[in-house]
Image 1 (cartoon, one colour):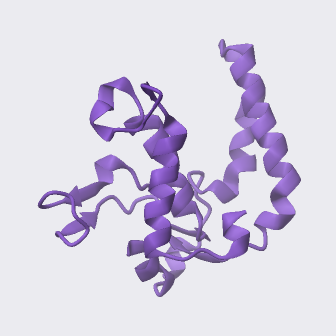
Image 2 (cartoon, one colour):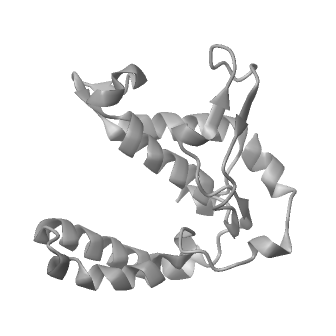
Length: 160
């Protein structure tokens, strides 16, 4: 619902360069060259480099994605619920400090990433994202995306 509301909202100040904006990924990627020198595991650094290569290979397609104001920081710490968590209960979203005019799909992608990182762990067993008795980050992300798509349709290019 927030995504739909933001589609009809614009503010000139949100048309800015913000490193948390996934459109700025290549600017942040310059730090990746320093990872191994900073003691980062070489295999993990290689994953970062592969992500950069994948991003660069798709950058022309990214340029065509629809844009809108994005919250930019959907995570479990920024969502307030009152009641039992049913969408008919009162709820809201906090922390608009990372709001930026960017690719509309970013809010779904960022929310799904936070679910994988913070909710799909033994420490958050209440999330219920299990596959063969193991916590499964992809199951959590899929559930988040399914929920988002029930509330807000994405265009084919955003789903790709």
